[in-house]
Amino acid sequence: MREIVGEALAKRLVDWGVDTIFGLPGDGINGLMEGFRRQRESLRFVLVHHEEAAAFMATGYAKATGRLGVCAATSGPGAIHLLNGLYDAKLDHAPVLALTGMQETSVLGSYYQQEVHTPQLYENVAAYNLMVTNPQQLPGVVDIAIRKALAERTVVHLSFPNDIQVAEASADPYRHVSPGKPPKSSPVLSRPPVPAAQDELDRAARVLGEGGKVAMLVGIGARDARDEVLAVADCLAAPIVKTLPGKQVVPDEHPLTTGGLGLLGTKPSEELMEECDTLLMVGTSFPYSSYLPAPGKARVVQIDRDASRIGLRLPVEVALAADARTALRQLLPLLNPTTDRSFLEKYQRGSTEWRSSMKALRDPKRHPIAPSYFMGCVDDLAADDAILTCDSGTIATWSARHWTIRGGREFYLSGNLATMAPGLPYAIAMQHALPNRQVIAFVGDGGFAMLMAEFLTAARHDLPIKVMVNNNNSYGQILWEQILLGYPEYAVRHREPEADFSSWARSCGGYGVKVTDPGRLQDAVREALAHPGPALVDCSVNPNEPPMPGKVRYEQAKEFTEAFLRGQPHRIATLATVARDKINQLRS
Ligand code: FAD
Image 1 (tube, helix red, strand yellow):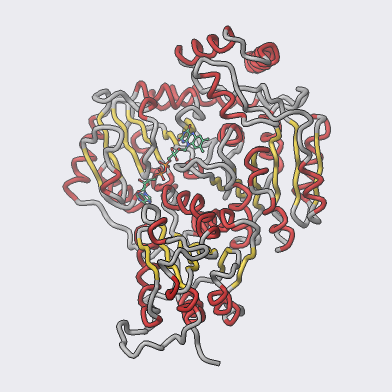
Image 2: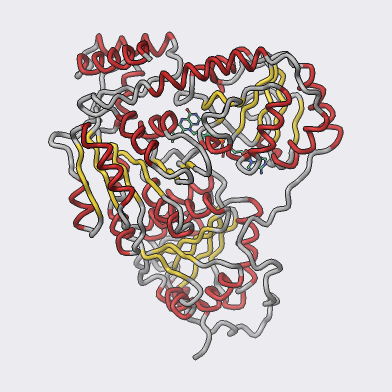
């Protein structure tokens, strides 16, 4: 059998260590699919129900493993559907290769059916973006694309016209590219850790040593530097604040951390940023500058391996363009241990109080069920090395506050694109990549409804993922954002009765249970977690539970009141919820 381009592509992916492709076939990629079929012993094709989910899966796979994520879609609509997931990868620095189809080269330009010029469409999302027009371009362009994706942790794209896909792999007499094996047959991060320059390290040590109230802000870029972050923080007696994606860098109950920052963050973290005089930022592009020290208020040292990401939000005195773990290891011996630990101790007391006030919100008696209690049950019952994925919405708040990073636990969301719906596809991809881990998606009814067909994907692939649907029958986050603008909510609640997603889970062949009674919730979560296959708990939660910021600012309280005065519906229910939360916290 002659080798076609589709097969040459599949073989090259296998050479690079790729073992999984997430995608949906179509008549624009039949030649690629034939190539994948011929390599099916080494290359698993995960058949999904929507291409957007395939791109999220490739992104989730890359985020959790550090390896290349690969997704495939047909020409035109399929390629268009991939886009949102690819932007998620780009914005959160996940290496992803997108493979798409294209109409035959002979008809291009003739207003042909599905003639969507994907390289133009992908121009903004893909750092390497090419329509392959000659079989002999393979394998060179595959190598370049993969190296680029891994080196820059970004999105790359190759589009294959139908005739090229089935053309003989070595049809071109001109040998443009030498087809040797890739230098490293592994799709894992290939970039060597970059050390910091010695003079910058000396300056950083001096600035940190001169600080009286030093704090650290760590992001997902410090993911592999837990020990180093803790060692430097301990040496400087500096409390550690974590970004939301950086939640897993340090265990949530570690005495050196005050937790998250921002609307979803903690009160002690917010106060720490207001009080510190020196800030060491590590592996973060935290976007909300109003939560950072006012410019000029603190001296800043920043470590980021991408020099173009340094100084985005604050003036920086010392910039260490280096790998987080390497730079912190270099820095540690240059630091003098801080003997006065009173600043740290003050924030340790604040954090203890904060944690107990958060635990008080997990009220098992509230009806309708408090979302904090729902997340709290998942937190109490999940394994110590479970992975939690979540969507964008109020679920991000409940996860930030009530998913406790301990042991080997991890946490993933769409940080910078902040898109709805990735939670379920992430969980599917992570369960594929890490079959021995417990993988839980904590999603809202809104995000789940967008890509709920993927629960069927989980069932059809025998993936024992657990889906927890925080069902408030509304777009909760937007509801509260509208109120914080000072106006009553509009068009954010679905009409009653709310959907019962558990019946969908059961019809897919999975375990599904609907919970409206708080007394039943713990058992339902326990049963779902213990179920050997895919399982879903649809929990009716209180739609009038505001995700309160760590510290309520004057403007927030003012706008909230304005919205109420302007006729916000469900006022009484909301005020009653806030009052009961407060009473629980005062009692704790
Ligand atoms: P990134 O923005 O991805 O930055 C990571 C940085 O690390 C990059 O600059 C990268 O170059 C660098 N890096 C990577 N690897 C290394 C390495 N090895 N060495 C050194 N540097 C490295 N976030 C919050 O923090 N608080 C909130 O309240 C909050 N609310 C949110 C609400 C919702 C509904 C959603 C969806 C998201 C929310 N986010 C929140 C997420 C927020 O939008 C940003 O994504 C997040 O703050 C950025 O986190 P980060 O800096 O850790 O990650």
